[in-house]
Length: 229
Image (cartoon, rainbow, N blue to C red):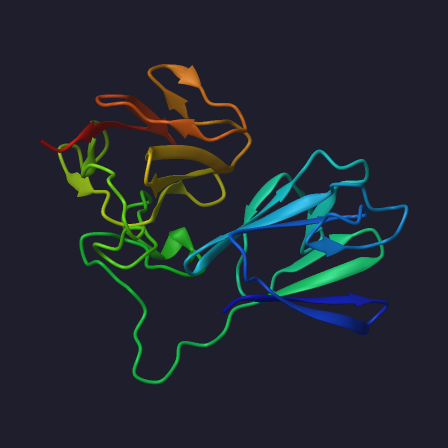
């Protein structure tokens, strides 16, 4: 289980396990992680965790959010990343894999679940990861779906969306996730200055529900989303 270590001026204040899918951070009392300081916005940021992956989103805060000294809007968190909000710091730590367990890895994909590796070490920069193969929410009625690459060196290749979360893109350039929910599949922009497009239209910051035969473009690669018969 991932956790955040909250500190200020080198003094550890609190250890916060990431028990919920979405944990809000801010000055107001209703936040999951409340930091009562005027440098912190009422609703400053949020950490979204799905299976072994977490990403941080700045909620248009007044003073911004830093990760390892760099200003971010959305950022995939890696083990050891340090989030900075005013004078406060939160270190993101991922628990080690328990003995007898192995990290999930689908050989047809290039990234496994957990922190994203350095894309420079991989042959093809397109990625797909996260979740246990075939895992779906209990009681889900979501139909089976897939994406097929329409451009790039792997054009024609098909990827079944059997996982709760599938991550696509090029780290450092543009990354998005497709979340499998009981009521459909949703595409969300996570990282990069520009947003992915669906049928030629750029996404906004909110999750976008995908429809059968939507054409997605992420990091310069076009792909088609379709429902499996």
